[in-house]
Image (cartoon, rainbow, N blue to C red; front, top):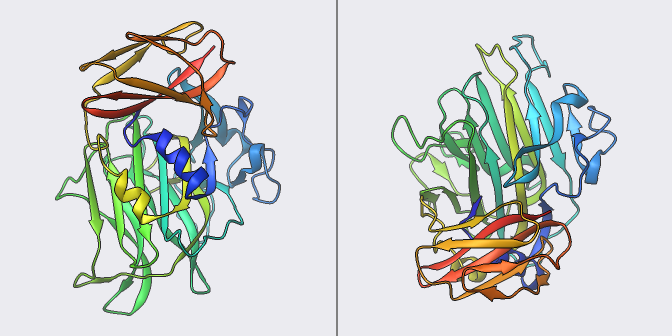
Length: 343
């Protein structure tokens, strides 16, 4: 998938400026059940917790070759109106103990969302959970409506009419909103500024922000990010088990200076100008670009640089170990980053 905000730069940020809460591409996990317990008590693979449903609802799977292993969450195949029921909810969570330094005032979350089939009713969500004072809250994230295909931002703001902190779903455009396509991968990104309380959300083709109080919503500075929660929730009228997918999750504390210096670039380009093939590959990775390729850099998902040599429009990867990598491709149009798999 297109890595429109350079994942290489993000990896560098985590090493130099940032503090990583969660960095997960699922490649080291075993295909099959994520865990063995759906009560949230016993952690499964790589520390992931599962809540509700059955173990089979949480799978490490190969959705497509380009992404390698990903996490899929299957919803309940109906909808329950019972009070306090857990039947309608499936949750995978990664809890952390990372505490932001004073200089890292930006909570940054980025991930790939697989929208799944077009049938069903409910939402697929990513939330960063934390605290507002002593109260637990979903600080920010995204929610995707399976039936309408609309993607919306999540954020906690003060309801100015009641003075109550509330989690809001923020639409990015007039009806029908910003729509995603069924059965596609989409890179989503949000930032919360702990100093000002401002939010910015990015999606393929655009961005939106709330950087000052509105007539209805007030910014809340000082919220503290802690954990990452992934949801698949059913709603009224649902009759099928719908699938949502997650990959390339990065949640970190970082600095506004780093993000402003490396912000949009090609991030909002809807059409990629660089393609790589074959992917996966065992020997040669070809690069097709609209402009001359000035340089390439390959890293693993920890940010470690891998030595490769650019030969016109290809690199030889036979000497590197099997696994998933990021290739950072620089042309006159900017920097694009792609994920590839070495077989």
